[in-house]
Amino acid sequence: MSDSIKAIQEKIIKFRDARNWKQFHNPKDLAISISIEAAELLEVFQWSGSDVTADNKLDKIKEELADVLIYSTLMATDLGLDIDEIITKKIDANDKKYPVDKAKNKSTKYTQL
Image (cartoon, rainbow, N blue to C red; front, top):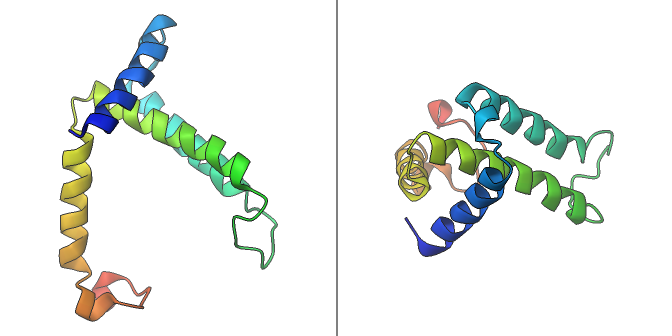
């Protein structure tokens, strides 16, 4: 695991443990929390019409994205998952699904490339 990920992971756990919140952080509730916070991130763009940029929304985006990342880090830590490892494995799998020569400049799902 990279030093920066490990350091932020430790900071998150220290914050949680100082408040004795681990008792509330089972996998189901962490998954629910990730989903709720992701929905709040999506809400930043709700009713924005053709405005799909992040202009003038960065503060709220940072806040909601941080919540998603914090809950995701807690879930990975509690389940004994190495964040570097699971992200690398997913990127490798996506690399096979979406080879550059077929996927570049396309938003097509891998089953239709």
